[in-house]
Length: 91
Image (cartoon, rainbow, N blue to C red; front, side, top):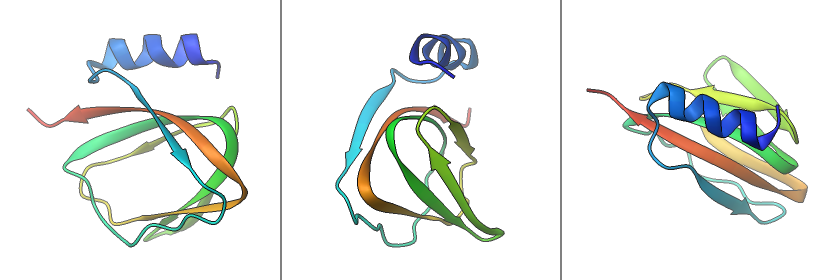
């Protein structure tokens, strides 16, 4: 998916203003949850979402959706990752 299409989709879903996240090569977050549903488009690089059901690799050009409350970690490879992300808070 391209960035323009992704931004339009976020707007349709009522997401907050999208923002860019840059993760350095080798970044690994501790396990955590969010109080919002996260949507992302990987603009460059790749990362792996470590989820309760197993890992999910997300390379450049692919999108992901992470529901609120799901425990996860982000693990970034040697190339780093740049992600365009949007949030939807439960109403």
